[in-house]
Image 1 (cartoon, helix red, strand yellow):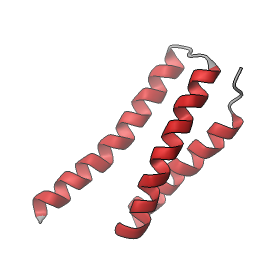
Image 2 (tube, rainbow, N blue to C red; image 1 turned 90 degrees about the vertical axis):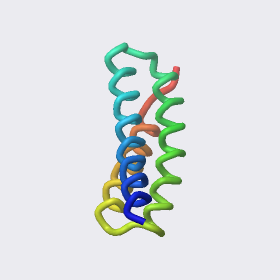
Image 3 (cartoon, rainbow, N blue to C red; image 1 turned 90 degrees about the horizontal axis):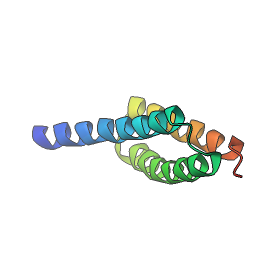
Length: 83
């Protein structure tokens, strides 16, 4: 059971790291806003599923962190202007 907990914790951390690194790369490369809006839309969808799973299966700190990431991605999606 301990190995399963370690694996899930590592994957949970890595999904957030992947999202952050993709966003950082796109910002540094001055990606067009329509590409950014598409990527942020996909991330919003993925992190909404992660948030729902954390809401039902995790304890409070992961739920709060995941909820904040989902909230800020949703705000970013609606504030980005596609060309």
